[in-house]
Image 1 (cartoon, helix red, strand yellow):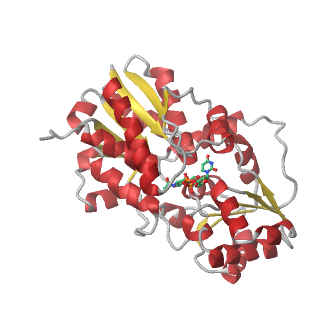
Image 2 (cartoon, rainbow, N blue to C red):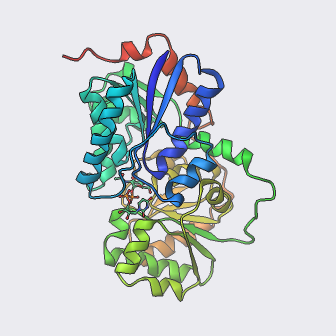
Image 3 (tube, rainbow, N blue to C red):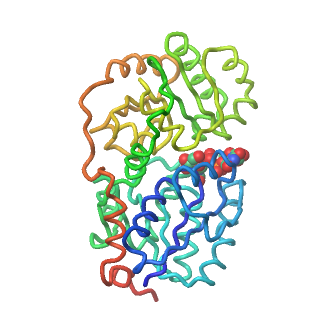
Length: 370
Ligand code: UD1
């Protein structure tokens, strides 16, 4: 029996953990003893609690309750909270997902205790170290003993950074596992949104923490909403910045419909039928690719290049006018043939759990530490 601690902390982690824990319950409960740790990086009902409910995640075995703070404060609080859990549980492995502060903090804590680290969603690189997530990816992958990768570019990046090929596994994408599962569960009476509409999500510091940039985006949304309904569930960080920069009124007096952050199922029911999604999220670039929904990513770069080469995603680094032009072009894309990246088939969790269980995988993959 292998004891593995699975770590989640922020909203985008939960949809990656749910399929793995479900797969263990389904067929591997005799081989893997999972322990779920919620760091509490996200703590609102809207950012965390609703996701546990929608995704049928079990109650965490531990909640570290770290809350918000500067990067150093939050990262340090996670490490301080997580170390005693590792010492008490003595796991065979710690599995971290994604690229948030909880991911890097728990990987570092485990590695220093000489516990093997698995990183799910390894190898993604935007090449942009201004993004806190890029730093988290680099640190986590440098420490990881086992890397589970979603797309070919991740393998190339990790090999270039000196990882050994035997530690890398292209397994597909857990976000898509959750999507496939939840699509089946959506009640048939889920309210459909009539007619064409656009959905917006925004939370990256590069977009929302600078008044000029946020204003340019708000102006684009206000203009777009004159011809196409725009629905905008607002992330807490973004909500705070909109107030701080005096941009709330511009949105309130426009046709943009601002809503609180949504749970997984409610948001899925909304975006899956959208004519257009405008976002700066990583996961939504992948999800829209899978369902063929045109997506504009309001960023200069993406760590998920397969969504550009195979999917419906387009980068829009420019201001108001570029966003509006790109929106017009993308709206004509709806209905194009959907192409799906290799292994994005809803079975990534199965592959990951099989790798974890394969005899000796954990022991063999951990290089001797001096
Ligand atoms: C974090 C992740 C980002 C991920 C995003 C998804 C890092 C570095 N960033 O960014 O990769 O895409 O989550 O949401 O880990 N807040 C609340 N309630 C909550 C959580 C946060 O009100 O439940 C507020 C706090 O005031 C906080 C702000 O939102 O200061 C930002 O939260 P934080 O976790 O620091 O970063 P995110 O922007 O959410």
